[in-house]
Image: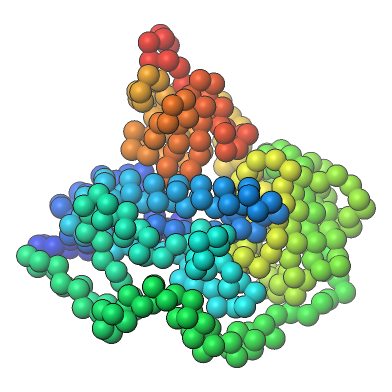
Length: 382
């Protein structure tokens, strides 16, 4: 996972948190007051843009994703209380014409990657000092914090105020290189299905708990080749119009490429490129993505152990009070401290670290259907 770095010269301290979603904030504060806080407010992810959704629903999902990412980042800002914050997003920009629409340019764009100016505006609204950072920016710490950009301030602002023009120029510089890179993608092989079957079926046999968590078959459509990953039965076979709960549509050349590389983590090697389309019948299912991140024996052993833990009866944990409710302190998804990241809105509790939402009356997760929060009215005895 991501790590955070604390740097101190004995006088000043900076924290480069990047996309490290730690729940142990005390470790970042242990060295003293923080001068600079480098923070990622928009992580690299493909959700929800690659999903097959009507435009109105996609608008809602994109807005919710941006809102949850900003809320999480602001919680870190408040907790670390640095003199200045240097925000950044995960992917800097999309230059390939096929992906250019993922840039946050127009108001109606379906992008979860707003630029620095959007987050700095939020910082300004709560009297926090945000610093715009571009390649070559020099930040000097002293009694005051001095910022020197490699180009004139007006040119820095133009990057964001005339973003499309800037990106089109940037794109033109790289188009030839992009097309050359695409020629390196592997071409169609005659035995892709057989290769995947021999690779994946032994891994599926190792992971009954993970397969139970997925709970349905997955259709992998690689060009005109349709492959069914039958998670309940642990099989990989040609698709024959069976029912499925998940679907991935990926350029055959990209599938061939990651297969030729024996890529053990398709999230990193493929999905983060956003070069695919997806569909699911129900709510978010982390198990299926855990499968695609665990395509080696070592990885699958660890993933299966984690899946087993999630199906075991949870150990009692410390409790906290949020509003009129007593809840377990740590989120049942990724163990975030709800005392820090829990945000109540009526009868809904949001874990702002990853955006999970829970019904405080029932404990049911509103984001996924495989986790439940232990909760009761604060006035009720255990």
